[in-house]
Length: 297
Image (cartoon, rainbow, N blue to C red; front, side):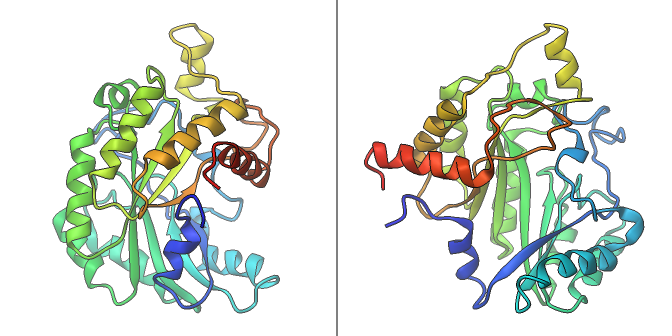
């Protein structure tokens, strides 16, 4: 028996075939960048650290998906796809018809069988949620929650609260859409107890998946400047220490919630910390060994 439910388990409940996410950059910004809620964006964020090279808004949604399909189809010709609206806040527009038009453009691409829409919990108006629920294809919403601690969210300039997350998740689940949460472990000011309290908060919500990763200190971000200037420091996990935290998260997390990932990898030229020099599969092996050591495998 596996020690936790993974994203493949979740997807197999929804699709009778293999599906692959293809990231899309539709040219959005965020409400804490453009002045709607704040300025400067999240202090840890440099969007270059996770955007694939083909994700250029000038290409358009359909062209980005075509390039992504070409990349995967060479190896997996029978694969189907989910258009993953990833970069920035993909519901941040007052023009709901324009938003829905972008989603429908993605769904019109051959072999695209659904959407995953990444956004913030304070950017899901009721009218848009109703339109998403009415789309004829599978739709999942992934909210960037990051932490259940409001003091942390304020410190990193998220410009939303945990109550916003509770509200968005509850309404999205009630609309019949699967819900994912994005969480970051090691945000400034949080110790292990605080991180695990976030997991406790997640367990109380109708959440289907979580995407967890370690805080990464990225060049060019406000957080990198703050740390360099000595305004505060961040928890600096070794790979083993972080794996031990992940074991505790697995034991704490509600077993029906699928974990999509535990780590993220930014480009080496942008990454200041952590420099573990581990591929994702190597960290997965480390975590599996930790789980065996504590009798969870």
